[in-house]
Image 1 (spheres, helix red, strand yellow):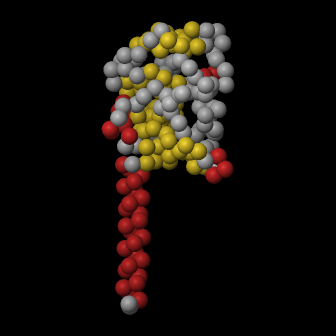
Image 2 (cartoon, rainbow, N blue to C red):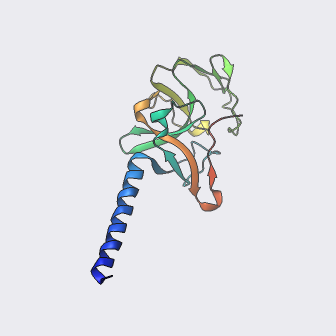
Image 3 (cartoon, helix red, strand yellow):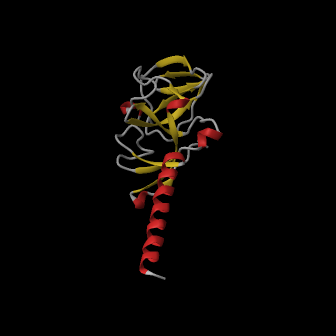
Length: 175
């Protein structure tokens, strides 16, 4: 094998790897960094997580899913889906009710004492999202965020990979 043939093989392999990485990032998975404490204790600041960008092309977001959405151009938020289209959301004394049934939320450190909100009904094609650290979360309760349209969803978080000693799968469903 000639020197130029070997150089071409290496160059071709590197180009294929770069193209595959770009395609995977554009269409399948993306890495996001957790900024802020709005999802504490589920997610910690500076953790890096993988987001499945394909899943919502084949399935609808469900209550409990941790999603990334575009809040405004260049600014993404990570929150938990609390309500889907048609759900009536109400917060009474810090406890969330979906369609008049109290939501079981073992991922919270504590309830939002003496906090009331709603009731509101989630419109078709939209989602009601909240952070797990309710006292410090800009989410659907804030009129600047409001309901999140399906078009703004970037995907569902499924794995934390950084820091490596904190690597874990992200479970969306509550038992």
